[in-house]
Amino acid sequence: MNLMNIILFCVYAVITLISIIFLSLREFHMLQLNGYKTPEHTWWMKKNYKRYIFPLALFVMQFTSFWTGAAIPMITAFSLFNISIAIANKPGKKFKKPFVYTARVKRMLTTFFILIAVIFGIAVIIGCQKCKCDQWKKEILTNPVSYILIGSALYLTPILAPLANIINKPIEKYIQNWFINDAKRILSEMPDLHKVGITGSYGKTSMKFYLSELLASQYETLKTPESFNTPMGVTITVRRDLKPTHEYFVCEMGARRVHEIKELCGIANPHDAIITSVGPQHLETFGSIENVLNTKFELADSVSALGKIYLNGDNELIRSKLDKYPTAITYGLNENNDWRASDITVSDRGTEFTVTSPDGKSCRYTTKLLGEHSVLNLVGAIAYAVDTGIPMEKLVLPVKRISAVPHRLQLLDKGNGITFIDDAYNSNPSGCRAALNVLALFDACRILVTPGMVELGAKQEELNYEFGQEAAKACDYIVLVGKNQTVPIYNGIKDSGYNMEQVYVANNLNDALAKVQAYHTDRKKIVLLENDLPDNY
Image (tube, rainbow, N blue to C red; front, side, top):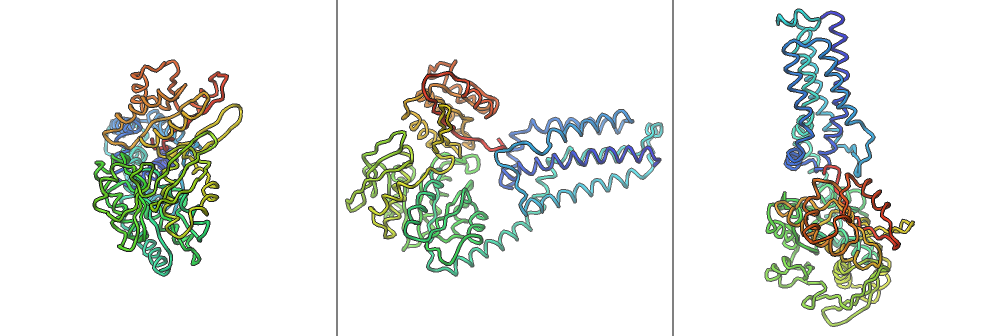
C-alpha cells in the first residue's frame, strides 16, 4: 500500500469507529430498556424497523460502489454518511431514563468491541494485500473488501449489539446465579424475618409503599425500592439493604412472562402473599389473560399452609380463583369482601373512608391520596397490618401521613394557575379509568396529556379506543403525544362526538406541555399526565 492508500484507509476507519461508538451506545441503551432480553429486543427492532432502513441502504450502496471501483469521491461521500450517523446518535440527548453503565453493560461493551476489533483486524490484513481487480488497479486505492468490512462493522452494529448480549449469556447467567444464591443464603440466616410478596397487574408498587409505611409504625421494615421487582432487583435489595434488625421484608414481584413470579418466590420464599389485581397488561409477552392470571397466582401457590393470602376481592378475575384458595382473605370496596371500605368521600384535598374488619369492627381514616383507586390498596394494606398485631386505631395517623407514590396520582402544584396530577408510571386500562375519575373531581379546566397505553397485545387498539371515549367524558381539553401511537385514542374521542378543536396531537412531551401553557381559561388548570412511555417507545 502506498502512503495515500494508508491515509485514506485510516481516515475512513477512524471516522467509522467513532460512528460505531455512538451508534452502539444508543443500541445498548435500547437493549437495556428492553431488559437485556433478546426476544423483547428482537420484537422491538421489528416494530421500529424504519430506524434501520438508512443504515441498510448505506450498506448496500457501499458494497456496490466499492466493489465496482469506488475512488476518493466515493470514500469521501461514505465518510460523510458515517459522520451523519455519529451526529444523529451523539451523546447528550436528554432521555427520560438515561443509559446506566452497569457491570453487565461494561461486559457487553467489551464483547462488542472485541467483535469490532476482529472485523477491523481482518480489514487491515486484507487491505495490505495487493488487489487483483483490474478496475481497482487504475485507482489509487487497493482492496475494496477492506473498506466494505469497515463499513459493515458500522451498519451491522444493531445486530452486533444484541449478538454481544447473546455471547455473554452463559457468563451472565453464572454471575446472576451466584448473586441470587448469596441472597438466598442471607435470607436463610434470618429465620425470624417475615417476608410478604406483593404482585399484580397494577397497584403492586402502591401497595408496597402503603404497607411498608404502616408496618414501619411498629416494626423494622425493609421494602424493595422503586421498581426493583425483578430477580436481580430483589437480590440487590437483600444483599445491599437487609439488616439483622429488620423484622419485615415487603417484596414487590413483577413479571412479563409465565413462571417469572415463581422464580421470584424461589428467591424471597415469602410467608404471605398479596395479589392486588389481574388485568390486560404485558399481553404481548404473556400471550393471554389466562397466562397473566395463572402467573400472578404463582405467588399464592408458593405460600405454605401457615401463611396468609390477601386478594383484591373487587377484581373479577381474582374472584374466579377463590374456590381454589378457600382460606384467602379478601379486601375491597364491595360488600362481599372480608375487609371493606365504605362511606368514601373524595375531594381535591384527599379522601376519607371507613374500614370494616371481618369481625365487624370499624375505623374512620383520612388520607392525602386521591380517589377510590387509592382506597382499595389502603384497605389491603390496613388488613395485613392489623393481622400482624397493630390495632386499627393506631393506623389512623400512619394512614394520614402516607404520601402519594411518585408518578402515581401524585398531586403537584406548579403555580401559575396549573396543578398537575402525575400518573405517568406504567398506565393500564384500570389505572386510566381511575385517573380520569380523579380528574373529574376538580372544579377546574381539566386537561389530559397522554401518549396512550402499550404492551396490550392484540387488545391495544381496542383498549386505547375505549380510553379515548372515556377521556371525552371527563376532559375540557385533550393533548395526545405522538401521531402514530395515539390514533386509536383520537378515533375514540372523535366517535364520542367531542369537539375536536379541543384536541391537539403533539410531537413530544415538550410540545404537549407548551400547548397546555397556551390554553387560555379563566379557571385553574388541572393537568392529568397519564402514562409516560419509555425511550424505547
